[in-house]
Image (tube, rainbow, N blue to C red; front, side, top):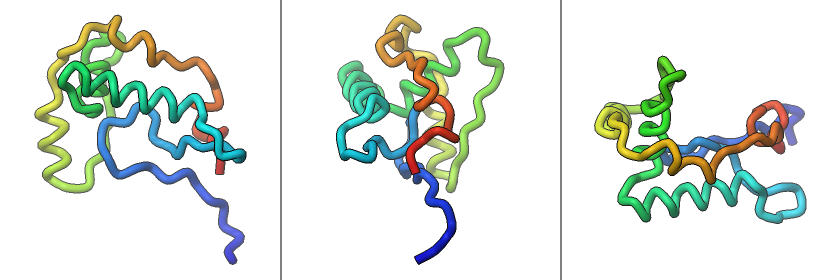
Length: 111
């Protein structure tokens, strides 16, 4: 057993707007997990990957000057570059708006 704190683990797949495990202590589905599932489903319904939809959002918002995206290899970098074209109207993202600090603030994510 270790005394180190357990950190939420980012999932390996690309395109997450919310990238932490979505189960609360009771095992019930959290708001974050429901939003992520809905986002993935909605992206698929319009023929986008979650990555394409996420990058499209960042590129469509005039107030966003730059987005920082991490990659682990050249293939991920190429995937992000290929997704870098706004394709969805901003209204498409409205159902995924989040104001809950428990989701927005990583220091409040379950450990």
